[in-house]
Amino acid sequence: MVAKSTILDALRESIPDCDTATKYLKKVESQFTDSSKTYASTLINKLFNEKYTGGDIREHILKISNTTSKLKPMDLGLKNEFLIHLVFTSLPEEYETFVVNYNMQPDKWDIEKLIAMCVREEERLKSSQGDSANLVKDNKKNFNKNAKPQGKAPQTEHHQKNSNAQVEKD
Image (cartoon, rainbow, N blue to C red; front, side):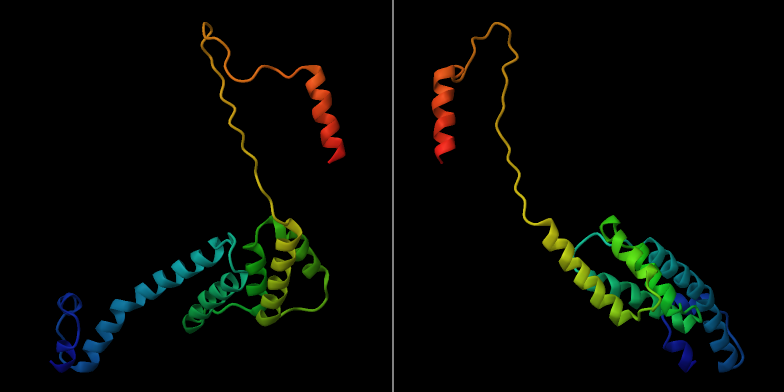
């Protein structure tokens, strides 16, 4: 009765009564066995569908590493090499050269080296892209055939030559 009183009502009602506490605890354990399989499937699905979309690459790698560590108690732990390749497959096309360079090296990285190298590559990619600005002009057109043209008259050839000369001086 003591063990039964500490369990949630919804769970308590789904477990049949037993003669001994040991049998009752076995029934409780059986209620959670199937859910651990579902949990493992959810984690594996999350691992294979995880994609890096920007932000901090260190967080992305640690998130994948954390998810794989949750699989270890279920005897589904992944080897370090597989984890490294899993991270590489989650990276976008910008990292393709980086991944090829890793695959051509004879040595294998651990998770710490992977994080350090990915952070360095992220910084290199950010610096090579540089800053950019977009120019948007207001280009409204009047589609009414009967309307008179609006706005400035076209520049004459003389005015264009002066403005070009001024630009050349600048």
